[in-house]
Image (cartoon, rainbow, N blue to C red):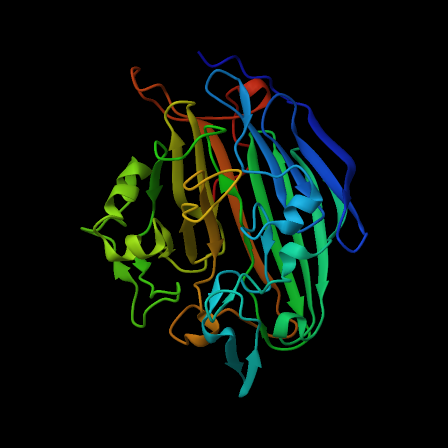
Length: 382
């Protein structure tokens, strides 16, 4: 039975040292959220979501993102665990793109392509931080200046990302960026979600609110042409266990090449002014539910197909809200070009609720406040 709601869960914010980066710069860990409810921890190194503790249906909390214990471990990580990714998330074909008649060469760090902004992208930087406090939410605002020519990208870019948790248990990530020259921008959060708090995600159930996806070639670059319909394919995700997707990899060429999902879904409506729901991830055993809402046109789903020690293959699933991969080379895709004096804006909500046990009557999911209690969502529904 869900405990009675406390009307005003206490919001907390704490800052502490978290070692040093390879260059000797100090790293901080900011922990924030509602007492007894959803709490998040963010590092100034890489803007990493290092922890996200969420109550299960019985009020017991567990960390639902994969994490490493030290800054040194993150510096050695090549899986972008929990990181803020930029300047261009996902892949750029041939490690190059042309903008306004000038070709810009980028680092090749993924089979001839550029992945997630290059080997020294935003996930390797130390961000500056300041607290975010309000009546209904608490968190941290991170800032980074990316200079002209950074990893080959043109123009200086000033980036601001705010992580906050509200009283209802929603983790919100707000992105802003402005440049001084025409450039391309695609920012995302690369958390690896495991709502059980351990094991693999074969039993997690995934729903994606999209009718089409981008088939890819052998190096993860989308084929030409329009997005492909998901109807009648294993890419039609309507709440079935991810185990079904992993089994389909034995016969489906797209899934077989990646070892699971590593594909971008085209969300209805493209880029939107307000977040709309993109996906729902359920863990029936714990009762935890994660809804992902976003203003972005794409949702890259990655089922940790190549993840190694200490976690293992399929230990989590990434729900990366973003522009389409290789957009700088695809004029038919929603544009990722940012002009001077324009502001790049993007918002993603991770809304945590509960689902009823399988042997009980189902009802509406409850949002999470202090002690895992049901509480009204203080954010106006988009």
